[in-house]
Length: 355
Image 1 (cartoon, rainbow, N blue to C red):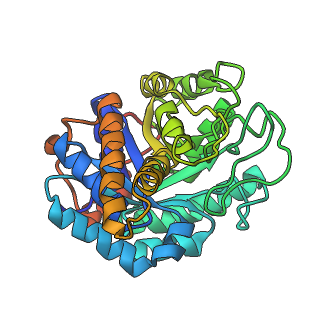
Image 2: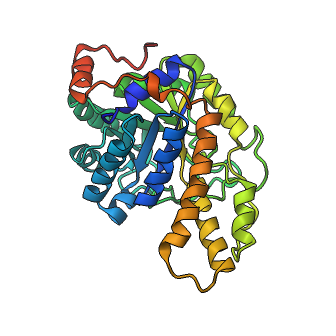
């Protein structure tokens, strides 16, 4: 099956009330684990690469790897997504290399450290959206800065993360401003800030409404029922993976992620894309440590990677099933980017209208 754009995939998810996990990849093994899981449970999937991943693996390798995965599993609709683009060049070069969707993160300046102004965010995101839609690619924007409501600080992932203390208003997306932002930028999906953050160390305790503001998502969905919402920093940091790592020589302090049941709550209020990276890293690292601990003489990388892939595959299958994604791959009819470009040109894909 051809690659699918984010807009097509999230339109289908909205119509059938489910969300699609967006798994970050850096290498072949992660891609195989994700696609094997998706195929097994008949799920579409979003595979995304950060600027760090593009630097690590290279655009040509990533592009061909995703195309190879699509050939291996033609039954799985795959959206290839640029995560946290920092400027127009990053986003447009991703499209050049075959990405069907890009995120323009205008909540931060191009250094991905400094919070931007609202006007800057609107301007840069609008430019990227106009260029991407011209060729049929989808665009995700971000409003509000990802960071902890406990500490006022942002976690960093692959070079993206605000530095210094952030105030409460910066850490929560304003619902009224969200309406204005979507209206002006025409983004296909909106990443919102509600207290989640990158990395494993999101919360010092199981999160409640004081530090994970799911009510913000609900308020935005009430004002923008036709706009697809995105939860970033939504790894659940499972206890069993923390234990697996620490029982085999790791030293992860006790930490808490975003409970899956809270994500399920968000799905009922318009969340259609859920970003997951840390959980996948932990799944693979846990098995690396386990094999190294149990078989210290082992030196064949495959003996580490095969169980690591299986651990990650199990995690991915769980998220497909919990998010309601499973069973939907075979129901999706993929349209080409040329067809999508025509739809954008006709004005048929207004993000303020329920489609």
